[in-house]
Image (cartoon, rainbow, N blue to C red; front, side, top):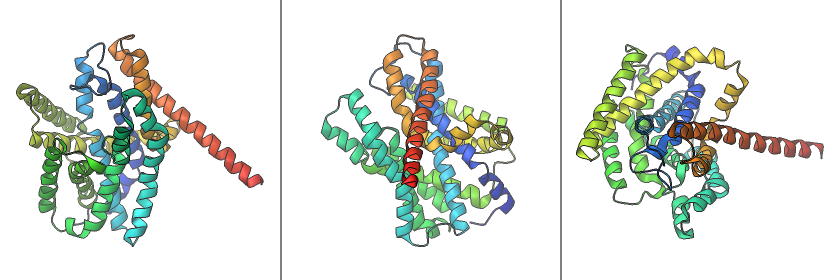
Length: 347
């Protein structure tokens, strides 16, 4: 790959923290409306149906985690290109394990797994399979997938950098294999998700090395293209009552790249204003921890309010309480940590 404009790449990096926060909020918003997805999401169906919430959730599903992976690829390529990654493989593994696997283990043991057990009434065997083998570890699946994708690209960076066309074709085939296999074989350690998401990590690398190759299109044009692709995909899949892997790939790629470009542009406009907002800075700084905690709070809100309030109010309550609850837990844990640190210093 040839390097793109250095100033443009550096300019984008300055806004990626806000981009990641916006993507995290889109994931939270998706989970707040996921109850209305076709095929279900939680341990109960919605008492009140809502086509709008269903479509909105389906649309968010086409870009939120895909774009997050694209951003990770962008940052990885910057670190690789600027020699900011550990030189040896062991150090790299340790760094990523501390960042991704340690939070996975802690959040699983003390938060996600116990609450999953409470709501789904699964056996201890199934609980261990879901979390220890990372088959269905709630929202924490993303951490395992991303860890393995990082390892894949650290080892294969020189190979994948030789030809963009061949690499994109290769990762598109992996997407197909991962999608088909996930419906047949259990997703141990999120291996099928690794195959599906590798393409988006690579697209992030392409954005860094080649620059913003969608800059000629306005945000409105990109959004219209994305919505049209999403609409066509929805009509075809509903009409034939079947998922088409190639169409899904196109929609997800368009969605991820569109979200990346638009969120970068939004971040450039919003950053000066948001920097003066204490709450916004708190969300940006702690977006990773909010992601770890939010979904289980939504489980409780749905259990208490499903059927007792209108669908739109329930979705709004999911969003408000999951964010407020997550930030409250984070604040409490940080306060306890500071108190212990201060106590150690006094001794």
